[in-house]
Structures are given as C-alpha cells and as structure tokens.
Amino acid sequence: ISPEPPTILGDASVDALVAFSVFSHLSGPAHEAWAREIGRVVAPGGFAAVTVLDQAFFGQIAGAQAAVKTGKADSFAESLAKTFGDLVAAQAGYNAGEIQYAASGGGEVRTGDYYGWAAAPSKYVERVWGAAGFRLVEWVPSGVLFPQALVFMVRQPNGGEVGANAAVRAKAAKRNLVNRIKQIISKRSRVARRSGVDDASARTQDSRHGAKVRARSEVGFGLVAQEEVGAEATGLGWR
Image (tube, rainbow, N blue to C red; front, side, top):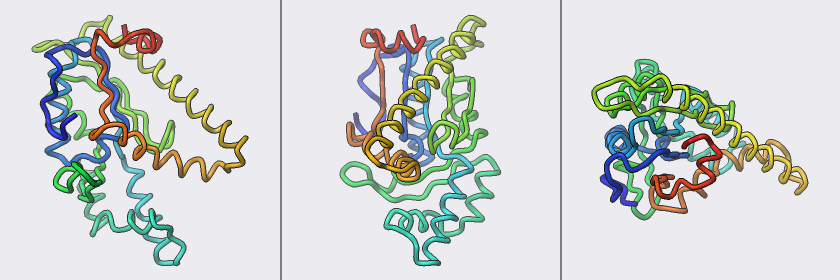
C-alpha cells in the first residue's frame, strides 16, 4: 500500500476495516487524507476500527523524561522523551481538540513529513471522520485493552443518518471485536507467563507491538474487501 491515498479498492468495496497502530503515527494531513479514503472505500453500514494515542500518551512521555533525568531510561524511553519540545503546549493543543504530531520518521517510505508520533483527541477524530462520513460508536480509552485508544465507527449513508439496524449491528460488532482482542491479549499473557516473562515485560512488548504489525506492510492497514471477508470477519459480526 502506498503511504498516500488512493488505494486500488473501489468505492464502497469494504465491509470492515481495522487499522492498528497506524493513525497513532500519522500527521494531521496524512490522517485526514486516509480518513477520506477510508470513507470512500467503506460501504454505508460498514465499520472502521482504528487505534489512536490519547491523553495517556503525554503521561508516558513525562514518565520517559523523568527516567532520563534519573539515568534510568532505556533507549526507547530516551527517544520518547524527545517527542515534544514543549509538552505543556502539546497537552494544551490536545485539550483544545487538535491533533498533536511530532515527526520522527520510521525508515524506508515512512518519512518524517507524515510519520512520527500523533495524539488525536476525540473532538478531532469526530470532526475529521464525521466529514469522511463516519459516526463514532464508541471510544475505548488507552489502557483498557492495550496502550492505545480503540475508536469504533460506522459508515453513514451519503447525505443521511445510518439506520437503526446498522447502528445496532455496529455496537454488536464492536463488542465482538473487543472480546476477540481480549482473548488474544489473554492468550499472549498466558504464553508469556509460561515462558517466564513477567507482566511488566509483557506490557512493554505489547506497547512496541505496532512496529511488528507495521512491518507486514509499508503502512499497515488491515483493509478487508467484501469478497475477502470470509469466516473470520463473519465471526466478528461484520456480515
């Protein structure tokens, strides 16, 4: 997938889309361009589940900065501590409803003009994705499922509100998706314990898991075309 839209997918050709640890790294212009593209390819009544960094991210940066001052920071914390030059100003911008982006780059096609660290508040997400045709169904804060917030949205018909049945299906799909994620996390935790990995180490590995996910493709989108949804998506309640 190219770092910039459009994709080769046709209009309204996708029933369900999942983007894990993608929008947590996109600049404002890139975030908005991909939201519009996703609005184009997801069919009315379809769903999008994306993760973003929320308010908790600023606390993580503050913790990294404190670790640097005490000489207890690892290489990841040292890098994270440099994310925002003025952390207070970044938090204020976030609280005002604006995305806060710090360029870092990620190697290869992931250049700093669009790729780095990005904290997106709910007001920004609702505004941007609302303009792309989506209605936010639920926001699960970071720390509940994993170290990012989960945003679950339903694609509305062009020029109208999504029907009651679609809204009910969206909420059911969200519950099924959350349950599936919890099962995966629980399984990984059990495996980690059997391997002698403590909970803190497991959480650290989870926080960096996005890098492994992104390695599967240049951008990391989990686009599911209608003809490829199959049994797994059906099990999530997406059909």
